[in-house]
Figure 1 (tube, rainbow, N blue to C red):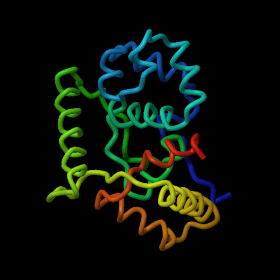
Figure 2 (cartoon, one colour):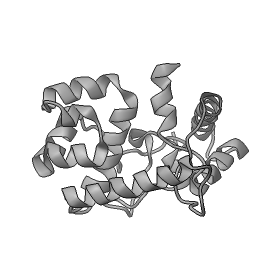
Figure 3 (cartoon, rainbow, N blue to C red):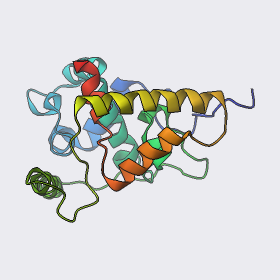
Figure 4 (cartoon, helix red, strand yellow):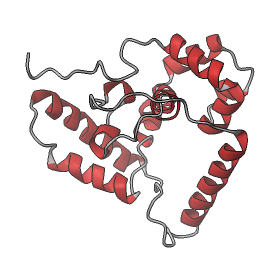
Amino acid sequence: MEDEVNYRNNPLHSIGLKVLLNELVDHYGFDILSAYLSINCFKVNPSIESSIKFLKKTEWAREKVEAFYLYEFKNLPRASDEQFLLPPRERIIPEQQKPGEPAELSIEDAERLAEKRAKKWGDKGRGGRQGSNSGYAPKDRASSRHKSSTRSHAKSDEKASASPAPAASERVAKDIAKGKVDPWANARNRKKT
């Protein structure tokens, strides 16, 4: 029993998707969610019911909303590289980290962020990173499958023992830190394969 991990400090522990969405929509509204998350269920005829239906079927979108809830609405510090590899509901939040006040977000900030991302992707599309080492590079299917298998091995190894992460997981974490891996690619490609 000592090996069990305590997830209770994670704000997502025992909170349903409907409650989570109600809190986000009540505080930010669909416009802010649409601007920051770029998910169509928040853009086209948004409602709590239709959003829940979509998010229950679409794992990558649900994980994106849950990460937004943790790091913008609950204002927790960003996850470590090892924790970033896990879905938001499985992340372990240290006991000393407590949720804070929701971040102040605006449409203008979301537009600036979108422009910055578009410029970053535009630079990469012209034959390389051109000095940027902080973004994510697009990946092909084969490397996404490799990351997926690496992630599942890392999760099973973490549950099996409290020893340091395996070498493959460390490589993936380093690739994420260097901007070589898109952490959302695994979720996007899950439905395609």
